Length: 192
DNA sequence: ACTGCGATGTCCT
DNA sequence: GGACATCGCAGTT
Image 1 (spheres, rainbow, N blue to C red):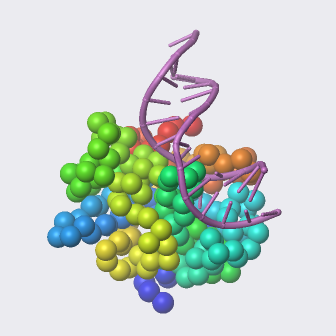
Image 2: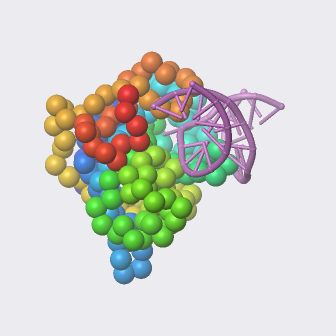
């Protein structure tokens, strides 16, 4: 079991908060893109809004594997969404990465997001992050301790700096407050 | 500021 | 056949 898997062997809500401030590192040839996670959402098998709610299927099987893997799925006919698998495997839990702040490799990100002029709009949504980091289904099940796509754990963000809200873009269990973001961070997808 | 909507592929019932 | 953990543009207030 990797150190990352041990670090993320947490209930989805706790893991979603723990992932705030952590970094995604995407190696592109001899350069790298680094982004800080600023917004997350929690999902698990007890949650009607979760892909794992009805048990294992071909799409969601990675959610029932070891923490620290990437769960990447395709939606709306044109977008990918990135999740980090967390918790004990039987929980089918994962954390959706909804927004991130570019720390380096801005030129590489812009190359994948050519129509976008405002830097705040490059990575402030789950589909946008996958475009910016060049993440597709080929990374579904990828071990995030390994190149060319890694998750680096950082110092936890204090609870006092985390905002908790309802989730975005779902139609089930819309009352549950399982969205988390870093207060006052301009790269968050939206405020509410 | 907000609202509506078209694009588009895959999974699941 | 319907739903979908979205995005970006166009139109309106």
